[in-house]
Image (cartoon, rainbow, N blue to C red; front, side, top):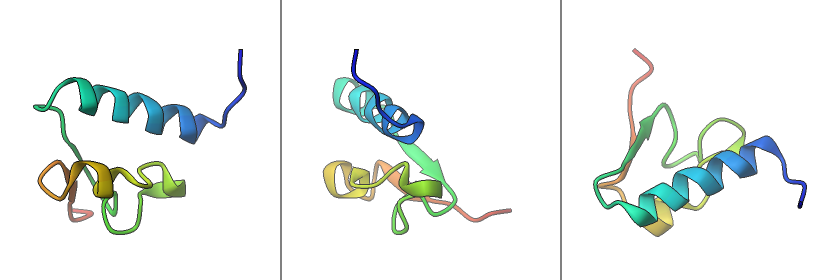
Length: 59
């Protein structure tokens, strides 16, 4: 079994589901332009585009 960081596991799981189901999207504070907290969503904006990876306000 390979060892990866928790953030990598999160990114892989989210990306896998987004590839599998076009209805799945990611939205949150700074998840698009700034790659989310600790870069969890790094590369997802490039792969899935701005209609499926959305930045939202903090409040």
